Image (cartoon, rainbow, N blue to C red; front, side, top):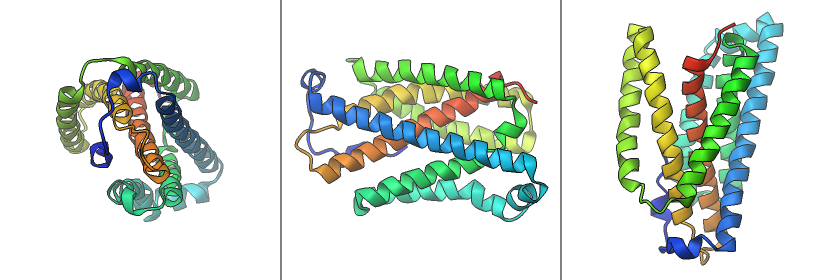
Length: 241
């Protein structure tokens, strides 16, 4: 996850921030940009899967050629570049890169429409959306400091990654189920933590460009929380075609 705190310019008390109109506008911008990214990802995934189902040539080119490695690793390259260069990019370039990342993730996710039933995907999406909304609301409103929890969750993400790599070779259904359950819990917690962090780094005295960069990085973090929670939920709730 991207670290917002390197862009902090001052600390605003939670009591003051909770009634600040600027904060509400800022958070709304974060959610709107995140939602736009999710829409782009969903449309890209559905369009790509439609072509895959109706064109054998398309399947060969996209899924059975070296292009598949580009589809697999391009999102990772894009997010690393955006995370480490956000302050050197113009807000227009950073926003364009965020949308590019959303498109690349959509290409990667196209295969789920060929693996899982459409009704199952839709059901899991709405469960994810409802859970995300409740967790983000908690992160926004709670007075409890979630930073200790956030540190623990980041360690959990590393463990989750290692377990996923191990299971890639073992192909254990039991381990996959455990990873999926733990993954849902970790990204559920990160949703609340990231929301609180996004809220706390808001400062009404920031320049427009600084605020816009915070919005982009906030949207990116919440986007990744949602996407990961959705995927892990789908792995043990989804019905395969």
